[in-house]
Amino acid sequence: SYELTQSLSVSVALGQTAKITCGGNNLGTKNVHWFHQKPGQAPVLVIYRDESRPSGIPERFSGSKSGNTATLTIYGAQVGDEADYYCQVWDSGTVVFGGGTKLTVL
Amino acid sequence: QVQLVQSGAAVETPGASVKVSCKASGFTFTTYYIHWVRQAPGQGLEWVGSINPDSGGTKYAQNFQGRVTMTRDTSINTAYMQLSSLRSDDTALFFCTRVVADYFDSWGQGTLVSVSS
Image (cartoon, rainbow over all chains, first blue to last red; front, side, top):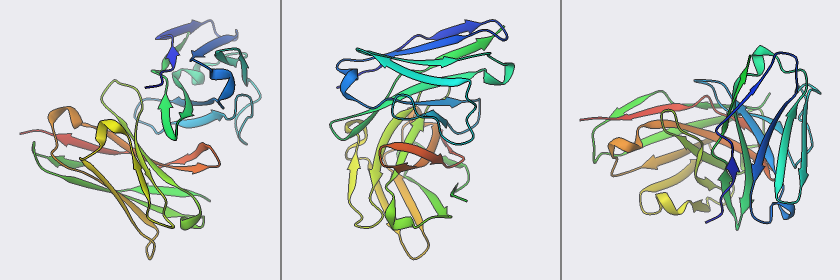
């Protein structure tokens, strides 16, 4: 079955730039979506189709993809950005999530 | 506005079944597939399956095949997920979510299912 690989954790200093990556085979042929999730809450879509931002999501959130790696970049990280971040794709009609990355803002 | 409101927490014994509901509002229910996602305590997101509210057609993740049944009642804009033969490792938060084109734009608040003897 298809797998997406994410680092378990990423730390970033307050106000600096955080990069969270998601790797997968042939990822270049798939649309990558990103969610953040705070404890006890539902996931929230922050980037869809690699680089598009839903309304209401700050411009500080940016998505990109190169080869088999997609990257979620958070500029000017804030304490409120601390959360788990998940990437997601479709593969053969099924939904696949990455294992999640815990972002800590120091 | 789009809303998905799920039923409350459930406590079940091993071997039992649980049925979780997801009531949709703010959009045409039959237009968008509803998916279900499981999250065990401290773990990541796991896709359970989906239902087409228009046709009732379903697709289930291999891990849940044979144990999960998704249905809907279009008269009350509600989707259901039933999981049977519950085990202790089924203790989890279950979310319903709406897919727009190919991304999940709205989520329910989650329903905690606890399985314990």
